[in-house]
Amino acid sequence: MSTEEKRERMLSMVEDWKASGLTQKAFGLLHGINVATVGYWVAKSKYQQCIYEPIRFSYV
Image (tube, rainbow, N blue to C red; front, top):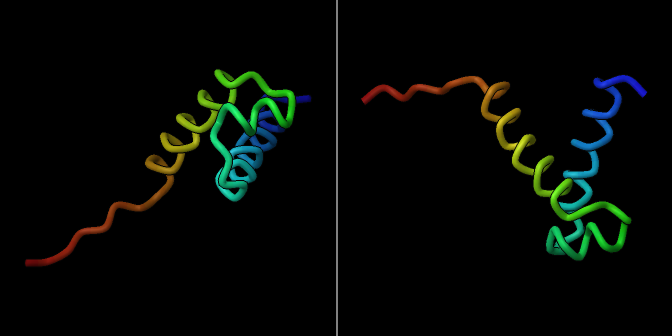
């Protein structure tokens, strides 16, 4: 699996976690993923979102 494929898979996992309504710990236990790994990818997804979202300005 390439780095890009892993990134896409893990970011998809973050979306699944958000939709689940579970805590990161519960989600990790349910899916056999270390809670630290879940937390890492949640943080990374927030960072990615900041990078790729366009900056919006409002005129005052």
